[in-house]
Length: 129
Image 1 (spheres, rainbow, N blue to C red):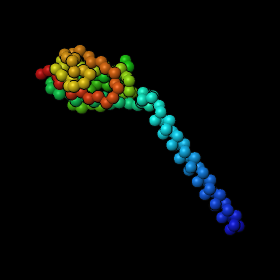
Image 2: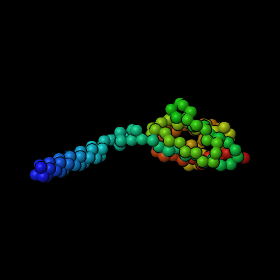
Image 3: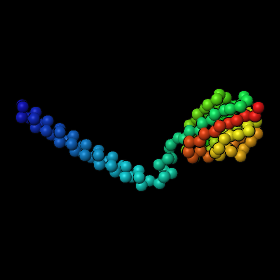
């Protein structure tokens, strides 16, 4: 009984060793495949952040992603996650004097800002007054 238990134990160890080697080989192969994929393909399912910091007089900014409203920022700091490549529209409910640097830097007043979310993007929204 002891001999069969030992043999059985050795067999388990060998199987575990083979499984570990195969898993390591698979993981290594997966990493190589991931390195070969195009940059856009690796990010197809990623999310990026859109952050808003509201300053100045009272105001709020609504955010639409791919045509659907996902929220309204009416406090000093808001953070939204959106799928990479999404079409984003930020619409203020008051006069904006500055969106800060970035894709909305030349948009003023009550005009909405439209951009494509390709990376984390932050806005320092300054309301008139």
